[in-house]
Length: 76
Image 1 (cartoon, rainbow, N blue to C red):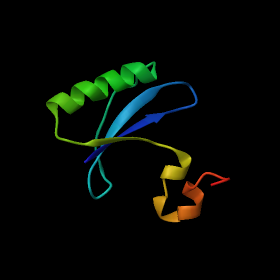
Image 2 (image 1 turned 45 degrees about the vertical axis):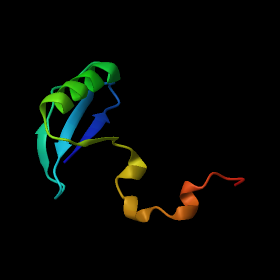
Image 3 (image 1 turned 60 degrees about the vertical axis):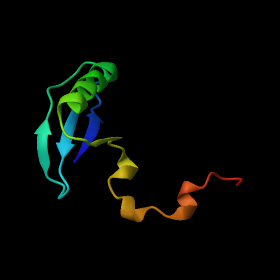
């Protein structure tokens, strides 16, 4: 299980609990700020199962497309 933090262009934040198979197990209500969303996630982690927390990013959708060179800062 992992918790994915998401937001939209309107500035609303929410979390989704995603299972091992990629299915969504739960979705939170909308929060007006990132801080409020993270506070809710912290409460969830105390009461719920162990889960990693990630942010939904455009490049995170397809981690299989990453290469080692794309992770090395230029000039290294």
